[in-house]
Length: 196
Image 1 (cartoon, rainbow, N blue to C red):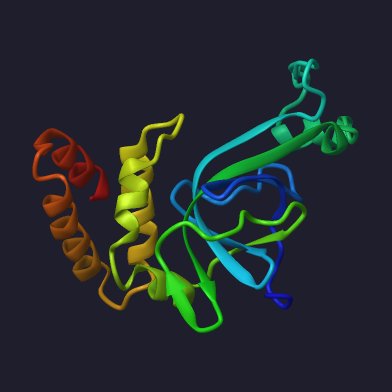
Image 2 (image 1 turned 90 degrees about the horizontal axis):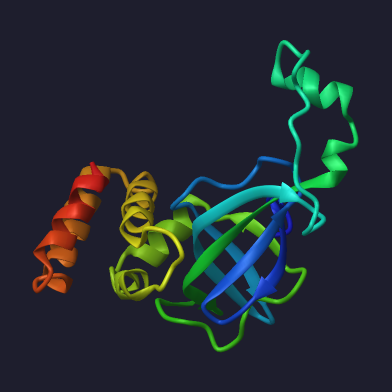
């Protein structure tokens, strides 16, 4: 992982999720992206479910600064201090981990380490983790402060890009969801509509 580009560091963590502060403003991975970090000798994988840009001071509200500017870039040029006063962070729900050569699709024994570097997962890692669809239970049961169905659909769309035939992966995932949500047809229909 050392040769890959770091996107941020873990600043809050638990076995089920981690919060990452990005190194660059407005540089969070997209909703549904898979990211990775470390805990001891484990690589932990998570799905991005929330991102935000805010003031680094909790009580300080961001104010508009571009009244006389023609572009957003001019706002940042006229106010270079903004790069140090604002930050972007994102939350990722843990869906599995790798230890030695084994990949597991359940919660790791340890939470991600504080200040552990965070990277985007590459296509090979996404394929390895999503070959089996057991991770769907973690996503379906996740108690997120955002629309869980949107996160699931976004992740499946992102993960499908790691496969030679994205459509085949999405069909396989749709069938698994149909089995898991056989008693909740409305929710199944909602997720399937979002996948397209």
